[in-house]
Image (cartoon, rainbow, N blue to C red):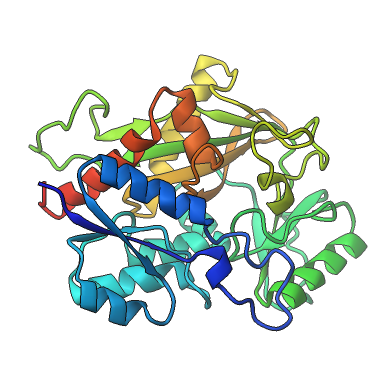
Amino acid sequence: MGLRVAVVANRKHAVKPSAGAPPDALAEYDADETVQGIQDALRALGHEPSFLEADETFIDTVRETRPDICFNIAEGLRGDSRESHVPAVLEMLSIPYTGSKVLTHAVSLDKVMTKRVWRDAGLPTAPFQSFQHGGEPLDERLSFPLFVKPSREGSGMGINARSIVRDEAELRAQVEWVIRTYRQPALVEAYLPGREFTVALIGNRYVPGEPSRSAFYDANGYHVFPIEEIDMSRADIPGVYNTEAKGFAPVNVGGPQFHCPADLPEDVAATIKALTIQAFEALNALDVSRVDFRLDENGAPQLVEINTLPGLRPEFSDMCIIAKAAGVSYETLIAEILNLALERYNLL
């Protein structure tokens, strides 16, 4: 029997940037094509989809419509934990939803906090420092070149050709620009010169004694997709995978090249996939995520960040490019994410 499934999102055209917002302020928000794609997939699966805008009206509209479950892709409008707003409301109202819960979204949005969790869990991530006001002395354990970016933005926001800094003057200028422009701390980390990868996974670890879902999932309850390499060597902005680069469709000239599966030695690929699951579990993530890596100067994979609300724009977002390369249809991808949540809420 079909369910009433509300797709919850912040659409680009419905968000009004605040005065003085940076030019890439709308980068994280979803296109109508994404919302429509998810609704079409849900309808094809026999469900009854609807849409709820994740703005100030959401708490009223979701109480009025009371869907059986929400398919949550909402980025949130403001604040340092904006991706947690919709999950928090749904938790309060006891309405099921897809994806990670409140605390995970709050932590994963903050790259500094995420790296602290990973570091304390013994996972490999580049040495880093958070700059709150810009005047802090540089940690003596860091050496140039370094990489500077906002601590609480996604979709490559705040990253440009000046993000790689090679001396004190460049560091201070970029840190000051990030703090002033994005009104948040700057994350400074060791620059990783190697190849760049992203790994998509869906699943949740099986509870002991729980039956297996299907052969699609491994013995632990995960499906880790083939590793995708993001090759910026021939892009218009080589070496910098930022908002502008992410705006290129895979077929556009001048954009990044996507290689999936990435050409990697088996042992390196196995390490990256194992780290993907460990990074996911360290943050208590659920259902779906995408984890980014770069290789260091020794060729060892280092965790960069995790996206617990990965983009789902058909034929465009990394998650969808990877699924397509693996022979997994968009409809199947949406079905599996939904079913994982339904399983958690005992609604299957």
